[in-house]
Amino acid sequence: MIDASDEIAALGRLGTSELCERYTELFGHPVRTRHKQYLVRKIAWRLQALAEGDLSERARKRAAELANDADVRLMPPRAPTTAPEALAGRRVVKISANTPPDPRLPSVGTAITRQYKGRNIRVLVQPDGFEYDGQRYKTLTAVAEHITGSHLNGYRFFRLEARP
Image (cartoon, rainbow, N blue to C red; front, side):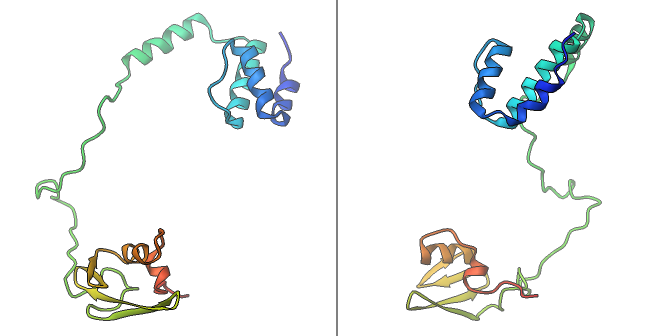
């Protein structure tokens, strides 16, 4: 029996390339990843298995039996249905058209204004989204992306974030 505890303890101090070399030595084939934590765990497992003995043949056979009997999902689960019978027993919350979807948003018909790069930006809050420069947008984020050309949070861009 080999004492591998010192070598296992030293694995964390090795570089990724050294771990890849050690993996190849222990497993007999090159590794396909350079994820350091993964390499340390796999090498430590292998060193421990060599030092203390691997699984017994009986344990290997039982593991193979369990793997064969396991239900393997071949297709992803179906999307939940919204049929009325599927909603039976559940609480359904209806949102009226008069309430704003987010408390940070001003009421419908309000203009949100902001200065951006020397321009005065004016966005009108609509019942079904936002209007800017004659075009309709579903979200403030879409408006902010159109204006800046990069992905930004719309509430943050228009300074509508909740303040403590």
